[in-house]
View 1 (cartoon, one colour):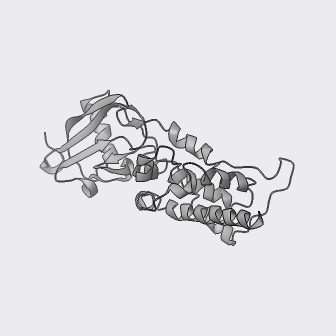
View 2 (view 1 turned 60 degrees about the vertical axis):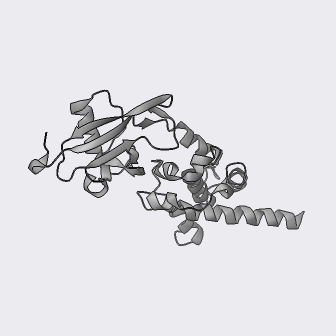
View 3 (view 1 turned 135 degrees about the horizontal axis):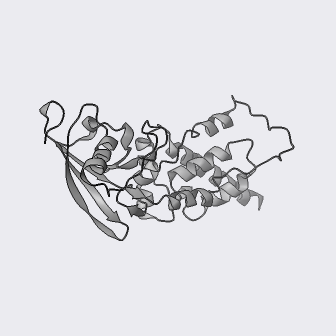
Length: 246
């Protein structure tokens, strides 16, 4: 079997199984021009083993649902070209790290989103339906801080990249903490104290070791590390302010 222009096929190793156990399986996949890792996974499912389970939606880098580990690195497979990541002639594809596996390459995202709730990374309304809109100054420093992380699409690449999550199951993780920082700086959100309580507690921002994998691997080039540093500053300021006023 050969691919485009007589190339040798790719040697692809795919993890198969669930959280309870599994093993890798090898496939030969035809090499093609402009081939993405998602193309490789789709070829395996369509032509080699229809039982392979994985997740994808848009295929154009908008939804983040196709995130997987590729040669040990979390990536959006739809935007990852094989030519950029292949090692020799080999690819290793696994489910996202730090999350339970449902089956094969599909992970259970519930723990990831549960931590958003634990971090109070949900909007706390400051006005009712009948009230006028809260004005937002687009040029304010707070608005800039809030906008910096607004393009997070919940793909969990940063969560999979985070070694602190790997070593501490209570750690809220970079995505939840970045969202908490966004809301903390949003003038329309009324949950400042609740957010600071949540992110300063067990598993909060002070557990971050500032290794920066979250920022390094974010496909949208966001910087959760900067958001976490902001939360560390604000929770520390509140702590010393309370001590001074006690």
